[in-house]
Image (cartoon, rainbow, N blue to C red; front, side, top):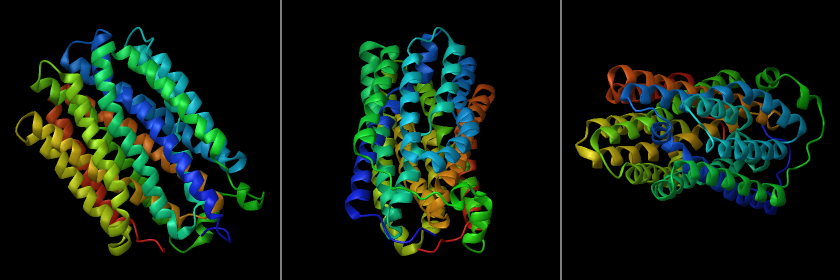
Length: 403
């Protein structure tokens, strides 16, 4: 499944450390601003609850739709020209577009910039391909868990600091600061990451489907099922996130920015812990088994956030959902990495990122439409249902990969 030999230990560990810091900073920048889209839309003149739900879903989904279209293209270019260069491109592009969001004059400006951000972004897929292709096979699961923990820690810290900053200096300044953080995130990638040279063989330009089919019996079906799972995971979780804010708006009249930051921060912290700790039970019981249990539990946590009593239940449900999401993400990515030959991993992770982005688009948009028509509770129930469907797909369509 991977090329002969293993990368020198100092190189892959240094790369992992640099990419961990870069992803932490980048996701901190993204999550510094993203949870506050509903509050920013209010500042841009959207006051009615149904309209706020609609524009929140549209702005949340616009980035994912553009990323879904562009991710396979970036994956092909990464396999051909290098994964590091694609990661640099994604970070610098995101720094520019997120900064420009602070200058938005209306909701349409914000949606257009979100689409441009998605079209040029994709830092997680690029970093995942770098780690998966440059790490010894026996350590891939652990390494991807560590990388995912950076995403989770950034997601935990960003909303907390962003909430305080939004309350102090306004939401526009939060977007400008987030752009600066994304620019900072590119420095460790530029200075420290070393991508192993890949000889130009037929595999580098051959059909990903043919190479995957030749790698092992059933590999195509297994990877296709896992890519579908990535889409369902993002739809279930990312669609749920803006609805947390809408539920808080229903329950609270003051201090919403700070509590929003607390809810997203708790979810991110729980996700970070789960992303690192999931590897031990996954090695013992299997990646698929852990993923199935986490999917069912995530759906239950989302329902609890809506049905439980008071603001505390909303925050606790968001934190629990974040924890199970933190285990699901690296478990699915690890299974993809173990099923895929190294020569085409960037392409496969590009398709995976496209599926994730599609879920990122459909989840918030669909949940936002449901919330606009029938209230946030209906949108949350739909997100939980998608999580349960994800568990079913894992049982029926996915196998435990060879380790």
